[in-house]
Image 1: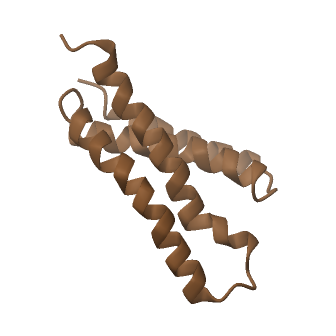
Image 2 (image 1 turned 90 degrees about the vertical axis):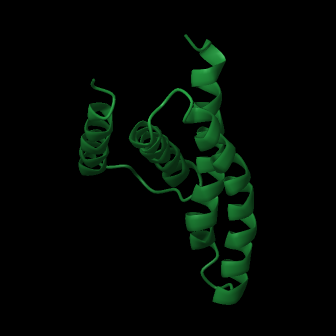
Length: 115
């Protein structure tokens, strides 16, 4: 049986990779007057660090999780990170329908762990 770290390390790496990717994908929304080419290059630069975490997370994680389970974990973390980012960084509200939609995605990801 793999130790706790074999299960936790990929999840933590995916969490941090999602933080980088959320900034790469949505951080520019606060800078709408910046030229698009600058935004694209800045996003690529941020995404590089996301990949430096995401690729090892999936490689290590595949020793204890299936590929669909890793994707499910990644989706749940994406929703959590995005919700916090949306509130904290963009100053947007999360409404009941957003929560309901996110909950359905989490329920779908949960099904990936049923044996």
